[in-house]
Image 1: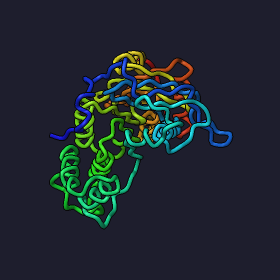
Image 2 (image 1 turned 135 degrees about the vertical axis):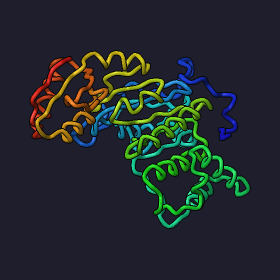
Image 3 (image 1 turned 180 degrees about the vertical axis):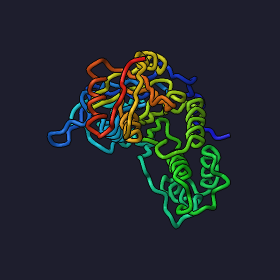
Image 4 (image 1 turned 180 degrees about the horizontal axis):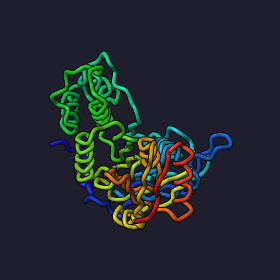
Length: 311
């Protein structure tokens, strides 16, 4: 069984302990010139939580994660991780976190075990312990049988799992995953969910981003919804889902159904999309103005809408 030795005594039950905040931000802001990517985000994530960060492309999710991982310097605001101020002690914070970016590559000419061995050595792990550490990470991500496969032979889902194993090698207390389920098939997503739940049971706190809320609903203990750099909602997953399922919408189209599905998937306010013989149905969490904007966006994208109404 994979475990983060040294952290067992600090492990929290799934859902976290609000009295043990591991991640906290205050008025966090990031500007790229005149563009504000993250706007006054205040975040609190407890030990052992799996926190889902949801929003459409361009919502500010990646920018927020990169600030938490000390890859971007905030324009304004404060970040505390494991009780340490990131701006004052970045090296100390860096030793506690693992960051996995979207579309992180695996060296094509290296075997899986060689790739992980290289990073284990670069993290300063003793040579006598590298094999065991690599094996335990491969076991957790269910890639033991593929240890001798070359990077260029991996599927997208396998590559994501290998990169996750690399991220886990230094045994981080806080894990930050940017769109890890992107491009994964349903089975690979189930495997990812099981991995995150196992880590949570071992006391690891995880932030995982996605542009689809339902993709994270069965693995997260809490969730935050971002759009245009603003954290619109944040709370327990059940509360956010209940609040977000107020309106059930029926959409019928003459043509452009694939375009419609892509637009719906990209909307932070669309919770669940189903296709059936009568068209497309989905749950919508915003108000009437938001619903009107969605309809306008569908029409502007060339979708020929023949029906759009609440059930």
